[in-house]
Image (cartoon, rainbow, N blue to C red; front, side, top):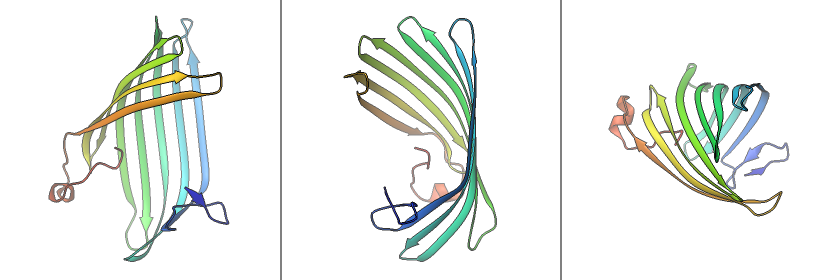
Length: 178
């Protein structure tokens, strides 16, 4: 995406701009003796967003808080990554009270390394009380062409399991995190 004269991201039709006011990201890593790692990340940011559409101007501001814990285990020919994520987004637009969207996910990823080739597969189960639950599957391949260059390709598919809200039952829609 391009940026405007203030450095704010905008799309090619200049239909929105977003400004981040405050951003914090902290990470703590615990290294075990056998080279396994426990990693905990916490992030927080505040933002303002302006949307322009055929319906007029639509502004909102909000915050995002994110917590993630991961366990990385080295295996004979690669690694296994298992983790949990909690994400909370709050926002307020020009006409509504404060809204909250909370998302939880559990994920698994495994890599196998053969010389310059890395084969990976994994899945992520995402749950949200408004949008239901869905599973995302990933299959990928990376090829290291040099010390500073890597070629990567992957395929992701999404399986929608539930959609509990009335709004989502009345029209077809993909979950926002897919």
